[in-house]
Length: 422
Length: 83
Image (tube, rainbow over all chains, first blue to last red; front, side):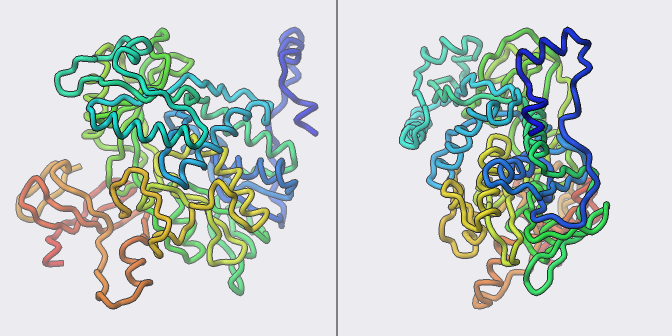
């Protein structure tokens, strides 16, 4: 196995360091497409690469190709705020994100790759008695799921986060729900690690290979057309995030999805100042500090359908105001860059991992603005579905027909099951 | 982004509430598939689209906005009541 021959270890780093670092090789091959595979995964993002990795490592299915229209790490997997957590409340979501966090905790050993998973803890701040009650309820749901949650009062929070504006006249800090196992990971490394894991087991990763058509005959999928030629396959999985609508349309499908933009921001590199992930409970603002020193933070959707991958100024203004309200100390940090990612929003804010009405065609989409932390479990459960034809226990709630039937809606925010509410 | 309200003129998009794709409402007895289509399923186009915006902080008009989801360019606006 290539992963053993080219494995990473302290000994190898030492040896390469002493011999001019001439022994390192590319992490994955750049093969020509074959005429036919058993399984094609459309989309080489975090979820698609994870799916390919688990198809190979868990199910022993290696005659697989991942079709990526751009390059590995160039989509949302390399453009997010890198937060990893399992603090969901509703059945359906709760067991899924719990499953994902457990996969995260073993990911570096599984992949033999340093994804810089850092369980630095998340503090979800609350600012009123009513919000404390809601967070107590959420914390109990997390504990019932087997995950960790600690309720902190104001002084308890102050020990961890001395820099907040506790006495803000409008939004004083009452306390926080602390999720110690939550944290961050290096997003690009997750893509690279999964790509290397899949490739080393024989999966072909085909970059610059855009799918332009899906071939369907007699109600079953037969393969795809791509910019690098036609490729036959018995099974095809669509996992393309914000572009789900366009790819599904190639199979004649309409999805319960609207694509929206979510903006995020990074400052210049600073000395270590924010040790954890912190979220503001009275506005859309969440922040952590990368190992390079940049403050990484984001806000809410701009809240209209768009593929422009850039937002408008009102949301920029809101995010900056929320940040300054919560932690005025960051006011002099200079914003280095901002970006907007295309989010596949479902009506209830929860994802879809399911079969379609077309035999052999599967879909994994609707990750809204929470896809990064989900990547391991999404890949694990999507691989299970494609390999066995049955939903994985942890993802059985993510049915595509829940909107049509009204049964099994997973409305985590409690705002309703309708577009534009999440 | 500024939206040209047919009644109020050019206004900041913060004055408007976005309501999504402008679709024809089916008959009440059109059946489950038609209502699923109307309430949930979307073209979600990358390019030209028509969607509904409500001038909540203005004249309360419902407006059909034709715009491009790749560029944010707005090509036309009209009152929903007249479209």
